[in-house]
Each structure stands twice: as structure tokens, then as C-alpha cells.
Image 1 (cartoon, rainbow, N blue to C red):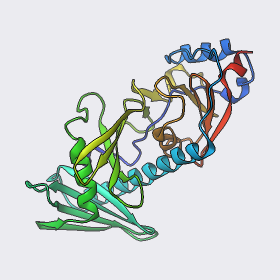
Image 2 (cartoon, one colour):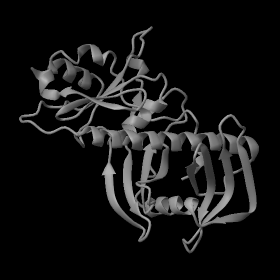
Image 3 (cartoon, rainbow, N blue to C red):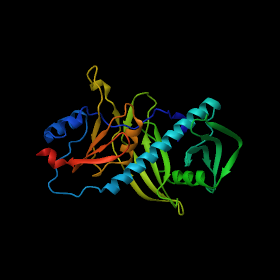
Image 4 (cartoon, rainbow, N blue to C red):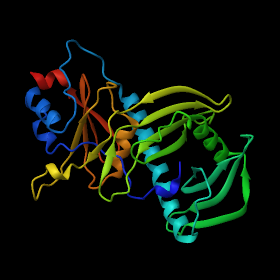
Length: 296
């Protein structure tokens, strides 16, 4: 899981649907045609009524997506700073980061053989409006606090993390203030500028006390590029994106993440089996309407 393959412009994204907002009030057949044209599965109209996620649930998804965005941004900036300051800086297996107010601390290193500490090879401190502070350690700096906890959470998932396909990135973020459980994310990235990816991402919930994976959630399946420039007429302006979700009946943390990160910044519409949601450019999530309303 080498960090050096990362780029600061490496983003998640969905398949592009131009002008979705203009036809959300049209027939379901139009929405199905657009989904098929973009290579996404057709979402059937629901037979009955299903209760949508509450505003509280949607806010939690939004907050997790924002946390993932900030984490990934800090790691990307730290990698750029490290590569600029230290040549041949590839002597590590893990990278972990955590915020302290408006300061981010990012460490590159490995877990100790006994699993009781995190061994730091390089450490980058990011402060607002200040050049990154890069430190290199000839002898590993030993950490048993936050770097260690996040490294331990990542290490618990390494055997399950996919190593095939596109370049995969990862993050470890506390699930609550107690920091006894951590969300661990694995998601695809690319080194090609202007190309963003959505799909093939997984979220784990890890218990630090017993080093166990409590929950595994496949958020999307296939990895799809955004935007699909080859399908766009010359002079096309991207106003929004869309994709269909077949695994769950709600948006995912990584849906929020890619909306915050991709360029140009545009909303993303998500069609589940029963609902259409919109993730706005500030990361907020709105329930737009029921799928069966579109079919009428």
C-alpha cells in the first residue's frame, strides 16, 4: 500500500449524466435510457412504499464523506511535500493522518513487528498558510498514540484489501469521539490528470481493542471513469453527474467524497431502488423524490 503512487488530483467520481436536473420530472423511461447509455444497471420502479433515510442519517453520511475528503486531501498534500523534500522516500508500508484543530499530522512508516507501535520514517505537518514541515528519521520514531491507532486499524484490514485493478487508496478515521472503533476505507485512484473514478470501494468498521473487523460494507462494485469524455459532444458543459446505486437504498460516504474532490465541482444525483438523492457541492445530501414519482 505505497503512498508514493498517489497524486493530489486523484479523485473518486461517478459516471457523468449531463443535465439530469432537467429531466428528473420526466418519465422513468428517460432515466432508464440515460442509465443504460452510461453503462449503469437500470433501477426498477418500486412496487411498494419504503421509508427513506432520515435527515439525521443523511447528515451522518455527509459528515463521514467530508471527513474522508479532508483526510485524503491532507495525505495528498503531505505526499507532494515529502516527494519534493526527500528523494527516494519509499521506505514505508503505511501512511496515516489525523487532524489537531486546523493542523494535520501525516506519518509514513510501518507497524512494529509486535504490532504494539507505529514506526515513523517520515512525518509531515500541515498548517494553514504555512509551508509543509517535513521531518525524516534515520531511526524510526516510535508512536503509541493516534498514528498507532489508525495504523492498527488499517493493518487489521490489509488481508482483505484488494491489490488488483486500479491503484487503491485508503484511510482510517474514528467512528466516534471515544476512538475505540475506526472506519477504514479503500477506494480507487488514478494518476491520470482530470480522470476521476467511482466504484470498487469498501468500508470496514474495526474495533481497536481486539483488532477485529466488525462490519464490511461494499459501497460500489464496478470502477467507472468520470467524465466519459469520449461520449461528450464538443463544447459540452458538465452541469451535474448521476449514477444508480444497486447495493443500498441510500448514498454512500464516497459519493460525498468525490463530489467534494472532483473538478469541475457539480452536484451528483444518485438513483437507488426507491429514491433519488442529490449530493450538493458542499457535501450536503437532499432527498429529491421517490423513484415511483418519476415513473408516473
